[in-house]
Amino acid sequence: MKANELKDALRDLASVLQSGGAKQGAEDLRAVSKRLNGDETLSAKHAIDALEAELTAPASDAAQSEACPPKLATQRHLKALNEAGLDAGAFKAAFDAVTTDRTLLKDDVIALMKNYASAHIRAKTKKAALEEIKREFSRRQYDNNTREQARTTPW
Image (cartoon, rainbow, N blue to C red):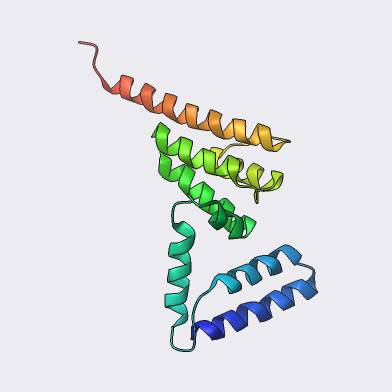
């Protein structure tokens, strides 16, 4: 399958979803279709690989963040937060990218928080969800320090 055929198939599928009432899914498919680069000579696999590389690149550019569909942006931010691990500098950069991303709505940030915290935590506002993400990072650091202290022998 060629990249232009994949773009056509995605647009057709988006139309089916739209007529079925799945507006958000249709919008996301159209956004992916628009971002898919390629022509008659490029295979669909190469076009998808290029798009994946573009979406998983560090989110340093605000324009890149604005262009991503919300669900893809949420996944990209979740990946950045998880890859930060226990590194405070990397977490701060990933967290700042989340807070400055204007495309993320309240529900997107709450979904991000639930996926990052992996707990049954309720947040009713975007601000509460962001605070819970910070708390989860602190918990992870504390748990790691506690494990490190348990491994050392006091004598």
